[in-house]
Length: 588
Image (cartoon, rainbow, N blue to C red; front, side, top):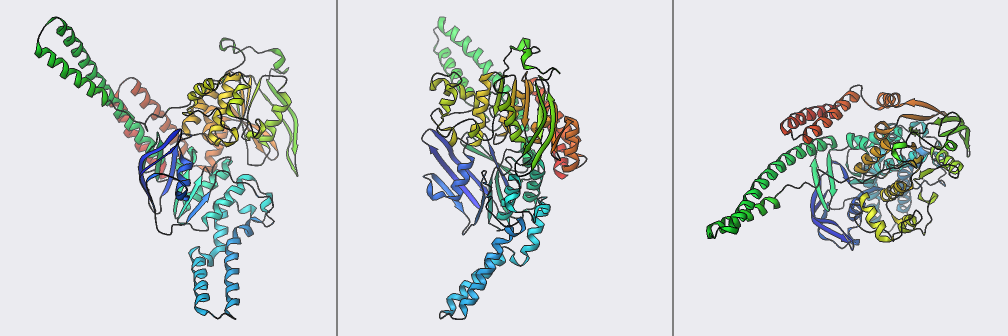
């Protein structure tokens, strides 16, 4: 379908690709992964619009290849007057209408060959998208996505997550040669995410998806393209297989590096001894021996193993509190409710055209880590913003928004945002953001033109500096690459204050929160992390999957522990066990 050979492309300040080569074959489900800012979205735009880029190398596409595309930013059109079922049928009805119009033209046509050619093309196009069965296919796709219950609902009235799934179904039913989707999972609740998984897994044609979502990565793809450091790693297999292969390679590389280092140290001792001898012994043979050993030492150092895809740098995310760490159990009494809670919500109600939340009450302790979870369109983001507005003047509270306009204006630059919290120079901002994996200087860029992942990393970098007692985080892992997600999870767990975050990311929730506030039937109920996990597994996984996933995590921890102790043979044995466990998970 697509073959890339020795592709190189650069921005003025950054090399994106250096002679990368890979292919996408017919029928493959391909995940394009990599750190934020490595050029994944640019790469798929080059596939779609290669004549707009000045690059070297080749991008070869199958003749007459038809692309389908779903952007990461799908704007919900509230002006659509038809229901969901009618909306998905519209392409087919337009094609039937075209055929009817051509038939009317036939009655008075003088050039019968030309009009018959147009009619045949229209019939062929209709057949290519299985037009004879379009009504059945629309219903089938809605059922796969778990959306059959909204078939008769107006498109204007469905949630944003449902609307995104409808756009994906619409593209799939057009049967493109290759369907490209850029982070289709962003902001989807877990039910819609499960629907997206079903759509991808059942799609019979070629698909290329940019995603950082670990749920989709674990279940939907049979090929991985990993973009890092201007190079691409091409892997035939599932994401879990890829992770096992990387871990096995890590064991191999570290064992090889240890052997190399031992040889380097041995030769350094020989070189040092020969240098000492050469200072007091006038012997040409000793000089030649010293030169040969020094040359060998340089070659050994030069061939020391490097593996850019095995160890990818995580952003250095830390979240600090207003009080010093040794006094984390103390807070200003004025910040605490009489019950000892840091935050108390009483009888909160939210309504727009209809009531979304009512009689909502809960408390959050000074060290609680809490996820606010629920379906798309149930008012979670608005609740978080209302909490911020109500308390921002009375307590130390940090707010991370998925809608950057809530915090910054269209003219605000990255530097102006950091200037507000005490940074004096662009150099300070540049050096600080390097900890967050920003390789180039983005100080003068408008916040509005940053990618979603860059905006989230920037907001986290600012929260790192502001030192709050309570953090309100709205979809903090959206757009973040998996390395940044893991770094953020660690930072949340280690933060000595309280965190309330809206999240749909299952792995983030189970990895770092104490309990869940679950939005259900216009109210909120408290659930333990374990109860939430069991609920999700019961609805979306097989009964064995939870135990296998636990076994997988334990094996990965043991392998890394053996690596730290330089016990390479034990690590290799466990890698074989891990491969067996992952095979069982993939089969479920």
